[in-house]
Length: 394
Image (cartoon, rainbow, N blue to C red; front, top):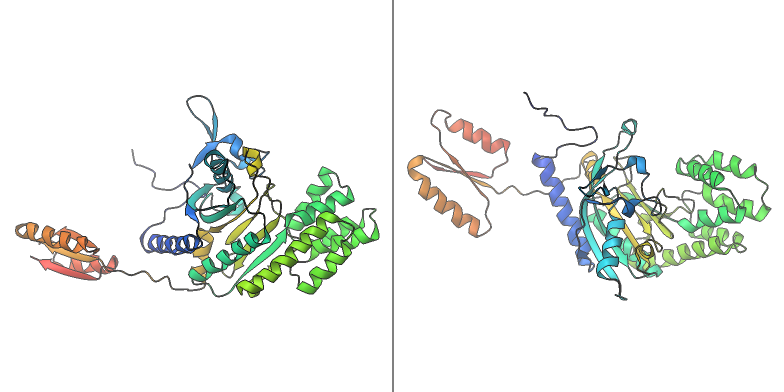
């Protein structure tokens, strides 16, 4: 029977130069994270269903890849790495009171509807800072993001920053039902700001609160506008405190010298229910999807028994590679492989030569010479595989 050589919908093979570029990029970005003192961690590709269940609020059950183990437990391929890191931190660092810094790389799996055109498997590289609830930690995350994107070769990109408590505080102050909240959330997620205005106008709200809802229609906000919104929200503590946090963050970004890469979007919302504070989303030319996602999740670790705040982000490597390719940014891959083509009588000489080169970090490929192919075939092979030089032992 002829085997099916195609991959399932939503996944693909990565090979050749593209794979080399991806590995180079991952190593480059990982070095940025470790440079900030973050420690590598690996968690399983699949976990118990409860780790990503409705209470955590990461991905709808219908979008999870679910299966069963021999004992009948429901397992899922991870759609998101952050809850796995939170579980791991609670298990191994339950009594640790000092901040924990983790960095990681892994694949996530979401069973997107085929009409969305999104990949169902993607690679994420990220960092989590646990045990620090200060605005300093928020600023450190943004600094790392900027350094990562610059290390990838990007020059033009923007990071949008919002706060989960702004939306939460407004809908609570308005007394919206769960259905109304979901409807408004959907309008904002789709950037349907006319719909947001119509929705708010149709409700019987105090004038000052109605004015505060104008925050949700703002995509890019200056420091002066933040101050104006903060003054308007003085009666609503949750919203006021969130806007105050954004102001404090803005001052720290000036110290880091990265304020020109950051825009404040007070109306930002996330589908991830575990976010409680700062929300992060990074964009650049060449891809319609975010290349960076993240935020503060102070209530996630307590779900696993560890009472600690946390913040983190991920770089979506696949989206970043697509953007780099479309912006025609060069990924500096060095091809230094040596090809040794040897006759059977020179096999020992070829092995000795290859082992000597490999012992000093060289890359050597051995191929036994076939006279029927001729030298041209090996020269063509070397060119196709970007081999630096050929040594002939024939």
